[in-house]
Image 1 (cartoon, rainbow, N blue to C red):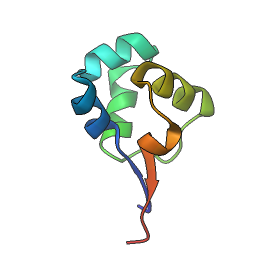
Image 2: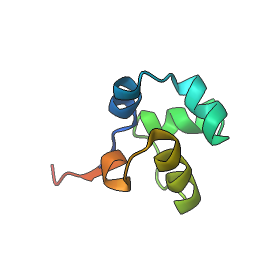
Image 3: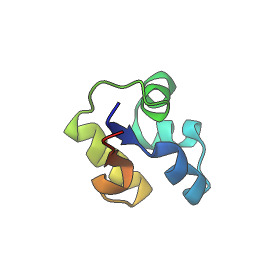
Image 4: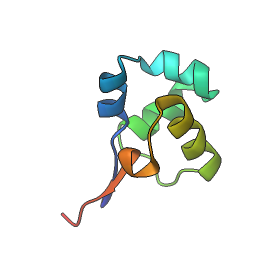
Length: 68
């Protein structure tokens, strides 16, 4: 998939678990896991905004495009 989610790397940098992120963002572990593993087909702007707020990052820190 050309658009990749870097959630795992950001969590490691922040020393945060997926469970902790789930509680702070208000999303289920299952939905965050889908994002983390790259199986998501879409992401809502409200979800992206919440993730950026909690992780103190920009959307480009979470998403990247690869032509491979």
